[in-house]
Length: 177
Figure 1: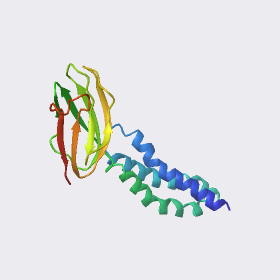
Figure 2: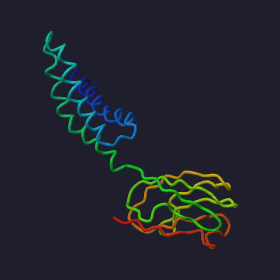
Figure 3: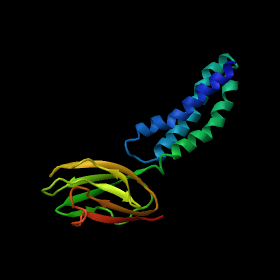
Figure 4: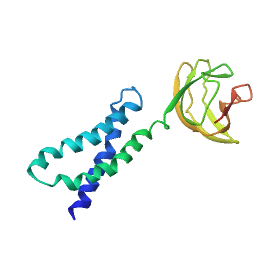
């Protein structure tokens, strides 16, 4: 009865290591947490049982758990890389929207919307006539942040305040593979 609980606890520990490594990554890249997690997964489990293994044989049953969970740990550490969020600045002014990027690929984006104009604006992301995401209204001189996941296809980024879209505050964004 104790083995399923021990295995579950060991699995939870092994799977949480990449998350802990990612939290302390400090932006040095996705490979550092994976290497760190692998070192922790192999090092902790081989070093921690060593003192216990000299006094008892209880380390042997826990050894298969880390080795079978290690590939999951490596996969979990590699998983955040595709989920990387790219940042794009959307500058709004007197009836225009300018984006800091010209090309987009599918993925998660943080849109930093800066209102450099004299009127209140917002930013709406539309796909196939339906709004996907939107900011609150943005006062002149203020900014807002919007996170959106863009799939392959065509989008329109526009301002929904009054008739701003009709006056030119719209830009088409094509997301390619």
